[in-house]
Length: 164
Image (cartoon, rainbow, N blue to C red; front, side, top):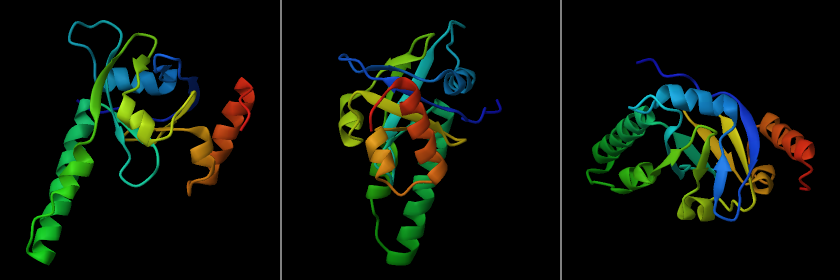
């Protein structure tokens, strides 16, 4: 199966039960990349921490294989250069939790990733082809990211009346 790229963005309110909805453009790609066996709306999204940025990544089962293969290559290169095993490559790449999402894209954000990314009441979603990122808007604005992302989060916050 060919995977659909994750392109799109949006902001969602994280409620008191940690529920938040994936924006429709990203949800459509996710549903295509990880369809439910029974053919109904919804599916599973894997939520994990980003390897180098203070945000989360969200992806489908097919991308898990990419992350696993990438970690194995990094581990092999490290072993060749240092003659020793470094388990941290797999530890970092494997951090993620599969969670169900419903037909409207709502899912319950896992507690540790939410804490790690400093996400409170708002979550900004941004597609990056292979996966999508989930950010706390204020953290994104303080981070070293593309200016278009900063402009995008400002736009969505302004549209929703969110003060940054």
